Amino acid sequence: MTYEIPPELLARHTETYNTLAPEYERRVPQKHAAAGERVRRLGRFVASNGSVLEVGCGVGLNLLWLVRQGFSCTGIDCSEEMVRLARRRNPGVDVVLGDFLSYDLAGSFDAIVADAVIHLFPEPGVRAFMVKCRGLLSPSGVLYLATTVGTSSCAGWKVKSDFPGGLMRYRQEWTRQEFSALLTNGGWSILDYWESVDAQGKHWMSVVAGLA
Image (tube, rainbow, N blue to C red; front, side, top):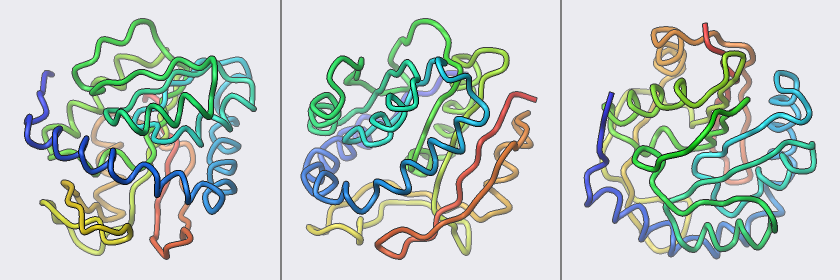
């Protein structure tokens, strides 16, 4: 299926994450352990020399851990500042500036990592995201997704309250049941699931899923 992110949404997200990139960089030490844990758990399902695509790679912390584990990595992000920091952290890694849904990525991958990404799309964009991931994965490939635990289903423009500046971005809340249904109804098999709380007190749910 084809879906084009509304230009105003893409522009707002790009502006917001360009502005917040230095703060994301400042918080890297708080996030090191969690990044290492997710890569360790992902590594149970991917060969040590496998190819990994990270969508919304941010400042490149997950990429750093993925490279350390021996994976061949590619990153993509729509924020110029995030890409700059990711490239600085991961010299030699292919980090692409672009919108995942419209960017033409060649080849296939043994794993796709999308940490805190799917909640930035409206529902049609999420469906298109999942379809594109299926098309980019090798037959035995796996998908890592993470989003916060929502107490109810809601979506719209919200202030990113855990960061300074009162910046807005589109945000969708997923309950545990909705998150699970997104995968199982889409033909994915849940291989691993866990929950965690970050340094800001946000409650996250993470999943590694394979093609059913």
